[in-house]
Image 1 (cartoon, rainbow, N blue to C red):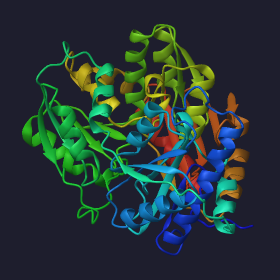
Image 2: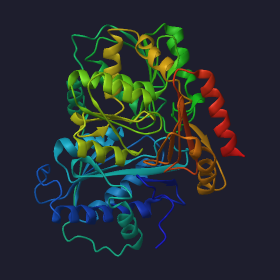
Image 3: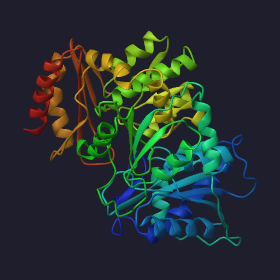
Length: 463
């Protein structure tokens, strides 16, 4: 069976209504209940579950204009199949994760298309313990069942209960920072009209910071475009606000706030690569000797920071499903991806976009962000992730390998193609969510070499 285009490697994302619609959402709800019943029969997460005999699923949604109807159809499918729903309403993805692992639920779904275009929507699905349901762990089987249909309605349909988990979630976040350290910083927050604004407002009630609010009101029309600060053109609001207000720090969120991005006191954007190093350093002060998970795109700085601070760096394939699985296997304290996904053992190995800014604000209370990362940037300058659309991804990868592998002193295929040379390294990988090749290059303290090698590899890719 050919699966609908909306079923991706990690989650569900597609154009509405031709790739994802209410009918398919209803089927996904029914198929999810079937999968969660199998989990129960297999004894998965028995010690974590607190729901008794009934299957209970948390459902949240982002601010997109189609999220209300898609989530309603999804919940209808879940309850028709005989499971109960806890509807937590408008929220961030990590709040669904939190609801699932803190309440011991069977699973959860966040209706969101993250940073995809306006006409898209999607779902991120988890099972007990907020473990991801991805292509390798049941998503494709769920997709086939959802498309095939034929489910019999349960003789005992489930119920939908609305629940506001914000206070419990905010209480949980307090364990990650020390209020005695925090200073009355001035911080710019750019919510991009996504879901982050109201949540940040509530968190700030307990903190000494002066907040400069930018685009805080959730607005599914996204008047300034989809919030995705990973794109350089989406950073101006936060950068200019930091400069205008002479702020100590800038923080910008994507639409479902599972990622946050940082600007130092000069308004300069800080690549996620160096934030990983800074958070790894903090993690090892709290948990000396711990394992720290990182991805292979850029890694020299992370490995050096972790080893210097007595930790154990562990390489993982890129992507939240792979990182979370490796986090559990290694019982790692922290994991970070350069794309601004940060994972925490205390958050049940899940990623969060709120915990990182609380930790970075604590760091800035001691020293400016620029002084904390500038040495890392000088030691290991990086290109940032550069995307290229190519006609044939596999053929292009083969071409690059034939040219560059013979020159490399180290080759790794954990995720795509990672090549290490004496003074520079690169990673080239296919996107799991978009038809793109993604390139990352870094050097050892040589920005001129960085520019040269980046240009050379890009020319090979785009020829």
